[in-house]
Structure formats: C-alpha cells, structure tokens
Image 1 (tube, one colour):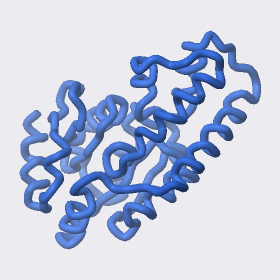
Image 2: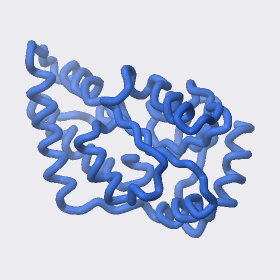
Image 3: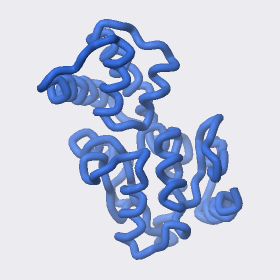
Length: 212
C-alpha cells in the first residue's frame, strides 16, 4: 500500500527521521532505508540501536503512540494515489479480478489510506497487526491467497520495499518489484508503466514475473 498504491512513504520517512531525533541521534538515509516496509517494532529496534538507546518496559507502546499520532497528523493533509493506479484498479475490478491490500501498516492507520484509494476495489484487506508474523514473513500473502481460494503461485504481488518483495517471494507468489534492487525471483518493474495500463497489461506482467 504505502509507496505502491499511495505516495505515503515520504510521510513515513519524515516521521521516522523525527523518531531518530526523539531517540537522540539523527538517522542517515541508509538507516532509514532499512526501516522501509517493516513493522513498527522492527523500525523502533533499528532506530534505537542506531541511537544507542536502550529500550525499557513500556517504551514500545509509548513510541508507537507517538509515531501513530504523528502519522495521523501527516495523513490529515491528504492522501493521493500514485500515477496510473486508480485506472489499473478500475480495469481489474471491471474484469472481476479479486484484489487484496496487504500492508504492514496497522489497521488504525491503514483504514484511512484504504478509504482514500477506494475500498470498493478490494476483495479484502490484511494489516500488520492481523497476522502473527508481518513482512518479511510470508504470512499475509499466504492468508490473502487462502481467502480467495487461490494457490500463491497464481497470485501477483506488487511491492516496493525489500521486506515486502522478500515476503511475497517467500510465499511463492509472482512479484513485481518497484525498486532498483530486488531479491532473487522478483521481476524488476518500472512503476511509470502503470500510467495508461489496463488489466490486459497486468496479465502480461504476471506472465513476465512468473519467469523471473
């Protein structure tokens, strides 16, 4: 969702950099990169380790409350879909293709984003607090496939983070990777191709991803 369907990764980046300041050491772009697509506990662990900050009982909830409150503030300014996404979703919906949002973002923050995209497009949604193991574990992709009665290898996943791409590949799905560097078995994809695309293009990309 974040970075793939909607342009919210810069907002997550802003809040994550602010978290680094809060914990006492500004993040480098390389440290920030390691948090992209991860769960909040993973992000907090990386930032705290970088800052040399020892977490104590209650810290995770306290910093999570701060982070989620800050993100709610940033989201309130508006959420926009990435170029071409709405048209591709509409074309797939018209072709009766089941689609899921699978995001490490927790439900309380994911729902405003899903509503902004258009909940009507999706068969269902799975968030990071609704599986035992979030990405990079394959759990939510396996669960989405189970819910629609499909084998994972018959599912196409679109991901922009290394964590998400790794999770989808581990689940056995075909994966379009919207990044310069992708894991083995992931088809590197230019997101600009979404502009003007239709369901038929997506089916062609699925065939290419199956051969990655």
